[in-house]
Image 1 (tube, chains in turn cyan, brown):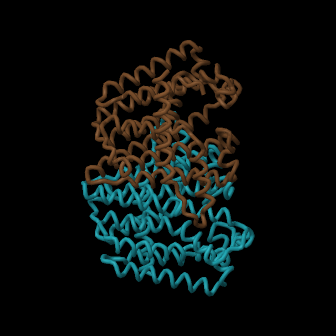
Image 2 (cartoon, rainbow over the protein chains, first blue to last red; image 1 turned 180 degrees about the vertical axis):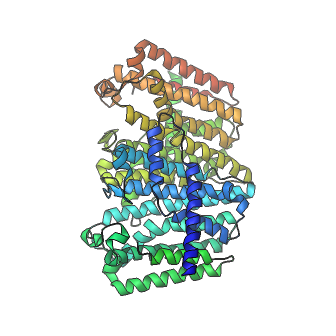
Image 3 (spheres, rainbow over the protein chains, first blue to last red; image 1 turned 135 degrees about the horizontal axis):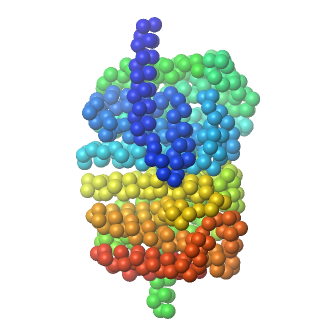
Length: 303
Length: 303
């Protein structure tokens, strides 16, 4: 119990830290395009859990990255990955996509600012992610790492990563999926950005290729476990704790892991994947304690 | 007349060259997200004039950039800037934006693939632009140039560049504009990416800061001249030569340079701006002949 409280405090501290980082990079200059800048800030400042920048930061720390280099080298990437996550939600909520007017109890961006501004704010955020990551600076050795990290970030966010996953999800909604198709969607839609977080943190800290690859594998597992837990909560969760309707997958004719394999096997899969991810982290140099607790928290959450 | 033919041939050669470059970078792997990849390719392969990559390439050449480094260092940026241009058209054509079903006589991306895929193909292309530019490679000195070029590209494409211009254009359509607001929109919406083209080419060739700044100024002028010429053609052009309806600005209640200042002053402004741009180029080291002819062609076009 004491440990759990301790972790909650550490997590809250990290969330506060990365939120301050991110907000520092959001455009604030009030020029003619101020509606766009407001809509971009609105989209990011909606109180997300900030999982991705925290994973990035803690991966950097686990591989012994220096705290001195944090603000010049790592913070821009933390902000960038959260901007990419935010833009994907903004576009996902659009009428032609999921058509959601509320997210976390607040109006979605297009509901608050109009559909054209929803499209442009998403575009602006995706572009701002690269503008921000490109603020990372250092010496010539750092430049090589920065470029490597940028390449991973861009690949994982794109057609062979997150955007690809969104596309297949959109195309196949309402159609029965095979287990293979479902894993493909989960991996690209959710794991890809988590993979980028772990890998970018490791690269910036100077991890070698084998270490970066191990972090990718761990993040793949975490993402899949997270999505399967999502499926479980939709089946078993409490509407009030979740803050969103349950059984929505069945209503929307979405194939889920639970529908394909049943509740028991789904729960076993979550344990198996998260344990494997934690083992992978434990094998790395550095202290993986906080990240392991974070993984447990992510996959055992009830909301 | 002979010179004009010579220039047309040179331009056609360049267009062919950059199209081959760009097409080489378009994603082709036929995986589960193949509809997305098809929609992305469809958007880029619609027969544009390829102005931006040509300006980038010729700016690189003017500053003495080596032909040997072209494919490793410059080609990825040429493809990237055309992808950014293409994504902006795809999103601009969406129902919530300009709601255009045809572009250059072909169905727009969302008209051909559906609105959700139009949004995602645009997102995929913007992201692919960075994935592609990040393929640029070289030694440690090149890395510094690559990062500098990426920063310019990202800034000019974003909220303080092209996306910002789109936003103000959307917000102010149908409202009377001042000359200052109109210039602001033209500069961000059109000049920004031309500035990126000239600046990135110069940076990759090793131009110094003063030279890069001069290229930015030249591109600002070219972009403004180009947009004012657009306004002139909407007033005086031949519908068949143009391939689109004339007097559409008046119908859409768009403030234009011609509406604000009259035809004569608009034509004088185009000459003044394009002459100043050519003078700026002539002051740089290297041969500006082809670029000067290209500027004349851009601002004197009848379509």
